Image (tube, rainbow, N blue to C red; front, side, top):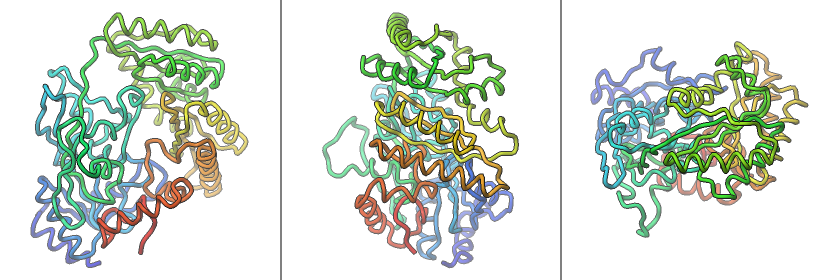
Length: 458
């Protein structure tokens, strides 16, 4: 690796849009989770696909790692340059290129955030539904196959990315997919790059599926005596075909945290947070049907939110739960982990995880997207106490072991990065080696986000 030559060549091409400033390097070495700082050697700010291709071509020539950066909100170290090299920050490639309202699609650059896209779509009657909570970049969301609170109705990034423009490890620009809603033409290359975490190519453009803005939206909060009652209600809701848009669980510890953070007065019990989309009549019917199911499982009366301001406050509370939980232990860092299991096994997985964390003495509120069997635990640790880190990692490991035993996965939406690399062999067996073979075929020099997702190589 000749990093000095690579930086010199890039400076000739990008000028001041490649930086070695300590503050910029430090910013791009941080993570939302517990991973230690790992500043890259330089940060590049391309403005066009051609510049991205040139960056990759030069880095390949000098055997220098290339790591894509969106907004830095990934949770398993995906955007950190643990082996040094060049971080490619896509914040200047943030345009909406085209909105085809009749086709209900949008072409965008990867640095555009989901909120910025929805702001741009406000007058069209359309919106982009994938909502991971953080105002993440759309390129980053595709790279991690993100989902979030609305996945139970609208699907994940896998379901909402129709086509991509990608720069390969050779610096070649390719296009995958089309604007058509389906295709039987060859390998699903779009699906290959969605979720690849930047290990196979750098996404420079996305064609996204849009949805119609619902005529009416209503939301509700419902308390339960136990997690088992709440999850039983979720299962009944899904099996009855109620087209609920969001159905989120917060356990007692999570409710306690958001009460303190947002000055709420929710009963300190497990809660479901719900949202219904449709016409005024259909949302009322959905809510009535759900209410009947909730009552069968000892659910409380609904606390309704029909006005935009009230609904916004409700989901802001949910999206800020991570920071509310951190506030329960000032100065703490978090190991933020997630698993996903078949929905019939969800109550068992949550209850056993809660008992395990309590027994291990690890502070870890639980919340999740229970409509698709996905939940998170925010494990709080003193960053200066190695014993707490060890105990939290052991608890996280047991969570994954439990999920795999129940027929689930090590991660429902956070991805692999380096944080969950050790679980890939257990979950995929020989399939993980096949992922490594694909990586080697497309990136033989191992310059694209090395050390992540696939079997390690030198």
